[in-house]
Figure (cartoon, rainbow, N blue to C red):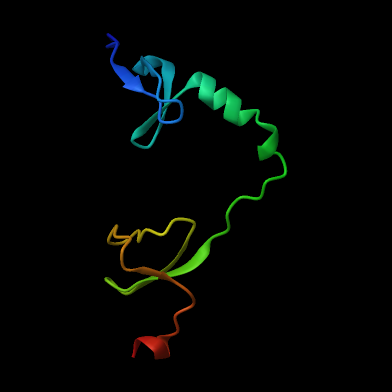
Length: 91
């Protein structure tokens, strides 16, 4: 197997590095130095993770809980609202 040396930019520090020297996070690349700095950062210790929110998509009428404001069913974010939606509200 041959590895191609493709230059990509780290999404944190914007430094151009080889693709083989990065971690892939979705469609973004993160260099190892940024990963190590963020992993060992003292401000992360004791920080609470974001909680899941009750969300509702007005486009496809889908209720869900998520940390992101993007509908997992239709993948739209412009019609997602926060709050608890009851069935009587929909009728």
